[in-house]
Length: 162
Image 1 (cartoon, rainbow, N blue to C red):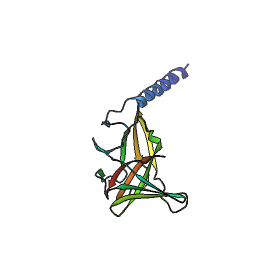
Image 2 (image 1 turned 135 degrees about the horizontal axis):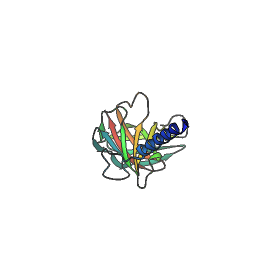
Image 3 (image 1 turned 60 degrees about the horizontal axis):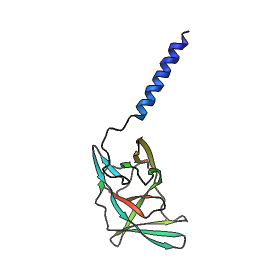
Image 4 (image 1 turned 60 degrees about the vertical axis):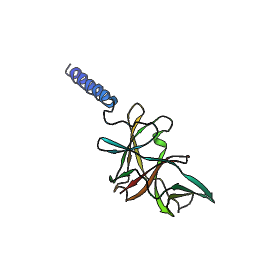
């Protein structure tokens, strides 16, 4: 008989934990869907939305974005993004470091060892179609230009780490 109160208490704790997990996110919300926003305390900074020009080569692709620097900037070494999903799934986003060459930003993606690889991201659902996306690179990102892009797309969301 002593087990019944313990079991009921455990069930109540589990139920309350499940409710708390589904509780809606109460922080700032992105004003537009399908655009990652950098989180700066209670402010959101929209990433630069652009289309990368693709140049196919043997076993590699060079993607070029106009301009040497993104107007979206963050000092946070491991940036956090809020993302309201509509047409783009947050798990499809890949993060690349860009090189600045001839006044443009570019990334070379290759089937071999010489091309850029996507950096690690962690995607956490916050309720509904709202997601938190975090850079998961251990020591943070070095200063430079970066782009998030849905896999298989030339659409990019750029920002500068300074």
